[in-house]
Image (tube, rainbow, N blue to C red):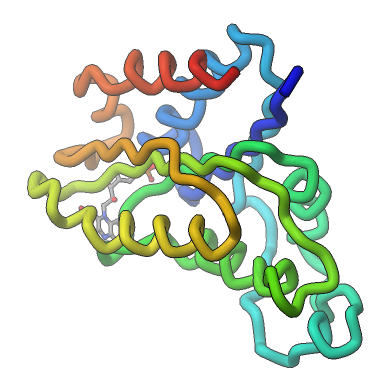
Length: 185
Ligand SMILES: Cc1cc2nc3c(=O)[nH]c(=O)nc-3n(C[C@H](O)[C@H](O)[C@H](O)COP(=O)(O)O)c2cc1C
């Protein structure tokens, strides 16, 4: 593929926090390699959770919620690579990220009126816990969401013991993440 479109969803409500630094390191690398990258701070958009009204499946119409998801939809539909950069909240993604994932219902491979064509997905996650196994649940969740939507998980990088704003800078992970971004060709 000549120029892969990369969509980076930055999931934290904390602006310029650890997960956004991970997102920005990835973007720096991907842009070095000439990739087209779009970054969206999902918590800055007002995105309603799915209410299972099934209008998108049954009537093949847009979601009943005309909200911040409209900004993400064209980018999702054009993306070749999806990156989710997120803090760990109760061993999971924050509610703002979960709302976006729930709204992927409209792209259901069997029942959706439209489909995603994203080939690869990447998870970048950070959390206060020093125990790397505390990231098992988010990794399992991300793997399931990726598989269901036809995306191959390219990598999942987690940063434990990362709590105060900027902690991730001391982990050595940002240069690894930048290289991962560079490797998207
Ligand atoms: C509501 C809430 C729940 C959290 N739950 C967890 C958790 O379950 N495990 C963990 O390791 N850290 C947890 N944390 C800590 C954050 O993951 C950590 O501070 C992270 O570095 C924040 O990333 P950010 O700077 O990108 O917002 C939680 C923080 C908040 C605000």
